[in-house]
Image (cartoon, rainbow, N blue to C red; front, side, top):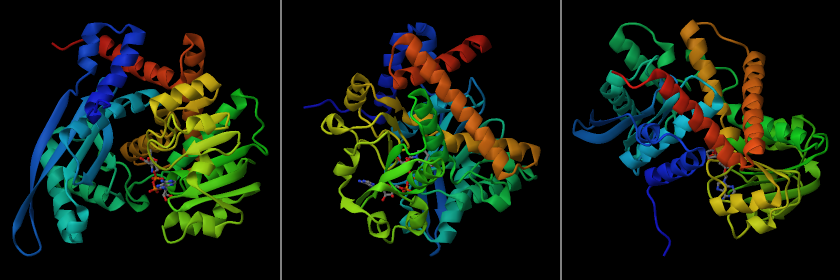
Length: 417
Ligand code: NAD
């Protein structure tokens, strides 16, 4: 039977593999392998019927050598300390790779939001944020939305912090509504980043985007915007899919024609656009220039990797490719842009939101998109150059770059006292 690892074991194993490759100094390795701080809180909430319930909550800061911790807060029944530790470590590498001045953090509450009224959700959110306030702040740790948390929850977080400190503090969370210090361009940023990375890779592979064939799996926030932006760049979108199935059209599909579908799950993209209905398995095997897996994890495996006929994979989802499939793609010469490089657009625009909030000065959408493209392209070029120089995969190069930056920052700062 295959060995099973917890999320945090997995995160440490990934780190160890690259730390070995880099011959990272063992003393720094010990610092980077564990979170620097983990706070457990017990959140009491007065329910609408007058009773009191308590919910376990967490905030973990993995590393803050490069700047304040950054990472989402999720509300789900299966949230646990091990998972939050792993997610905070992955955020350290993601922010480091993105070249933004943040460390990694993550938080969560063990709760099923469907069991709560809106008022109970508000009281839970405000009390949780007050409980973790000792380690939170615009220069300390900046939470953001994650699973089952949204702009409304961020607004309650921001308001609670501001009430407790006595002044409005926009920079304490990101992912806020536009009218409350949110950033233009944040909603489509992740998909835009996936598209920018794919266009960059096409240039490296000398593929003309005009007419290049693209397949996108998943038609939610990430997949929809990746498809729209690649379509706008002149690519031919020949395959799209969602949970219900896929659609193929060799002449090209216009994803914007199914915009309503992307915003709600009421109908399937395969019923809204003209073409041949196909399964998700058939979609992943379509011959194309670019494949963007933007649905969920473990979609490209050692079983189906041999059927994949693309030149570039730009990973919008988190963990869509297993390690075995990644090896097969590398052997086949497919350029894989790993998830924490390709889908970093969201955290990069969150960084822009924070910068704008600190200055109380806001940019227009063009400015945000221009700056996002600059950072995405710079990061992609750095990882590609390192992969070529070291003769390693893009994924290993991305980890290498990310870990190296944090290790150097830690070394420069030294160990206090
Ligand atoms: P979403 O819920 O808006 O969309 C998910 C889409 O995938 C839906 O269209 C759904 O129908 C489809 N889908 C579900 N199961 C499928 C299946 N078996 N086959 C094909 N399609 C299927 O989610 P999202 O925000 O677009 O996120 C997608 C992925 O990107 C997730 O892995 C998420 O963790 C990751 N991600 C999202 C962001 C972000 O800013 N939204 C940032 C980084 C990473």
